[in-house]
Image (cartoon, rainbow, N blue to C red):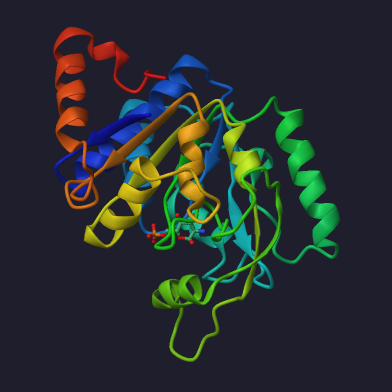
Length: 266
Ligand code: GLP
């Protein structure tokens, strides 16, 4: 695992966007796994800037989003599909036929989940997966207790997640209790994973996920089993890491001696 603690949210976002851009430049037909939440908004902003100012081309890119609330149509302003349209898809040239976000209104959730898994395979698997982390350590909507081998499925959200996500909904609006989410096992099959986190609120859970034991109680800890994960944090999110000095040292040495290897460690 490569852990990079940047100074600010903007630095974290710029570095994550640069890694995504490098992936697309290296393989224009990349399959990207995308995340929602407040954390990746800055990363998507930077990608839009790179598209507009530097011609970063998404025309051959395929995307798969991690999750979606059950019961919200794609046009609902709190659906993850809507979020992605507003924060990325409407501003870059990824063809709409190449965009996949779990469908929260599927008639048969079970059939949909099987189809979603097969579709990821049909495109050759995810080249680069972007992840945030929930307050309870979830990745996508894999709440504590999710099997580390789990696949795309229906998940009941915890009260903590419902509470956390209330801030995005209007007064009186109910937060859905169910979601369709890629499983931990699905995520671990991505060829490369970049996890981002910022703010004091994430410091404790980030330390648990990165330096604690691998446990289904903290889904993000499963990333320790993956051979190519880069974790990019701002200073606050990295403030509870015991080995922060070492991560900093590694980053500085690489930046000096082999800058091309940043983000390429396994
Ligand atoms: C939701 C999403 C996760 C995301 C998490 C963190 O629960 N399903 O993919 O990582 O929120 O959200 P935020 O980035 O707003 O802290």
